[in-house]
Structures are given as structure tokens and as C-alpha cells.
Image (cartoon, helix red, strand yellow):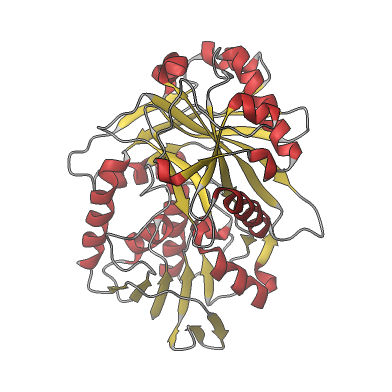
Length: 422
């Protein structure tokens, strides 16, 4: 049996781990030129591994399985160094947030750090290269899939018995093209998260960072939108993320190199109704509008007071950005974002300030756009020949869930069960 795996990310890693060293021929197609330029969102950006049933995806993953894949990634580091902790293990902190209207999200975390991630990815790649049945094809972008009676054609050239798409959120072009050709694949496509990356001095959140490192809370804003924190990076760095035709902002932290600031995302969740059916298109449009204002490859930076007052920022004060100067422009995010999103984020920050004084300081920094795409929830029962795993499937949104999703599909393949609900 010949299997094509499109994309080499977290989901593909889980699948390959299950399929390695058996009779199936597995060809991995990756658009990056080599392993050194390969970019696995989350793994390459920061490497936070979470164990939780309150986040990570739309499918159930047993916590024991989640821990297994945490250990898997840690074992591929050279020194086995990792920062660990639990979000809201303290009942006192949980109550403190809950009393102010927040919904705390409990999880365990394991932080590998950006500086160890290159070696992790390289070591995993070398591990798979030693398998006689796995072949890698770098610098090979898959742009077209066609399901035929006895398999799937890749780029109108090569035919495989089974094609597994594992392109993550950044592979939205291939996903959009495929579902336009096979609309029966779509189960649900109404959600997108729009927001900002927020940066402030460490001393304001030192107690919180010491308590849990990664704090995740949700809040029902006065606009009706649910707003949440995401990807907290104590002593971290703000970075940009290139999706090809637009640029967003993100954040990461390193194991050894530290900054004097903490950054985290604040995202408003939009669940839209018919006839809306393109959450990635909508989020991309907002991102492109922000990039149009900031300039190609750049994001907008604004102080919090100016963000509230819809004024363009021209100068910074006490808080200095960790994002490189050539990656941003001082401007006004209000020109790019819908007003209800802005109001939801302001409401969130002002209420968070009642729990953590200083969070709403005027000179804290706001970067945009930060967008988390929820890929269309795809139906893996629609075709025996074409499957989707990881974040591009809409079933997962974390490293561990995506890895486990790929591994579960691998089990189904080995058991010859292709009509699956994962």
C-alpha cells in the first residue's frame, strides 16, 4: 500500500510514528526546502505542550495518551530540559479570577522553548529517516488532489492508495481548493478568533507567572463575544508569523534567553451563521487589511491608551517592544478591526486589571493582527482514500492533540478501518 502524507508537522509526526517500519510505503511531501527551513507552527514557534481536556481540540484524547506524546517530544531534546507547571492548581487563584467573572482553564504544561525546538525537529526527522518505508520529498508543494476510483492523484502526477493531508492552518490554500472540489467534506465552518498580542513588563505579572507560567482564562464580554487569553510567554519575545499572502503576530519564549516583558494573545471568538462559510477567508481579509496599513510583512503596534481612544500611536514610553523594529509600524489598529472586536478586547483588559493591577496601564503594548484560524471541521468518513489530520482538519488546535490525531489515524490504517469519526 502506498500512502502520501502532505505536510511534515505535529499531526504527520504522530502518523509516521505509528506507520514506521512496516510494509506500507509512506512518502512525505513538504513544501519547505529542507528540514532546517521547515516550520511547524507551535513546535518551531515556542513548543508549549499541554495536557488538558478543556482545550486542544474537538475530539477526546485520553490524558494518558497526551502525557505519552509530551514524553515523546521531550525525549527528542538533547538535554531533556523542560519547564513544567499547572494552570490554576491553586484554589485561591481560581477563586480570585472566578469572582471577577472569568472562567479559568485548567491544564498541565511542559515548555520546551524555542531554542531547543530546532534540535527536536531535526532529531525526529533523523529518527524517521532511518525507517526503510518512509521517504521525504522536500521543496515539493502539493497544490492539487484528485480522488479517483483506486486512489488519489497528487499534483496530477503521482497516484497513491491513500492520501493524508496534514498541512496545519498554514495550508489553508490547499484545504480551500480541496473542499471547493469536494464540498461534502465540510461538517462545520463558522468560527474564527480575532485579536491582539499584548505585551507588558514582567513585574506586573510576576506573581501570576510564578504561580502557573501559562494562564488561560475566558470571559464573556459585554458585546456578547467570548474572549480568551492564549499562549502566555513570561520573559518572552513577540514575533511575526508569515502565512505567505499575509503576516500576523505571535509570541514565543526561550529556555535560556529571557526578556524583561511578558506577552500573550487576547482573542475574541466569532461564531457566525449562514450564509457565512469561510472563516479562514474572513480572518485572512482582516489580516491583509492590517498589513495594508502597516506595510508588507509588518504588523501594527499601538499603546493601550491609544488603542482605547482610537488614536494613532506616534511614540512609546516605558514599555519597549521585543519585536524587531523592522517588523512593525506605529499606527492605529482601529482602522483594521471591527469595532465590536475592539470593544470586546478593551472590556476584557479592563476587567483583567481588577484581578491583576497594571494590566491596563496606558503604555502597555498592543500588536495586531493576531488571528487563530479554525479550519473547517472536515468529515473523515466522506472518502476512504482521502483523510485529514491535525489542525487542518478542524479537529485539533494544539501540538499534543494534533500528534495524537495522526497517531490514531495510523492505528485505523493498520487495522484497515477507514470509515472513522476522528
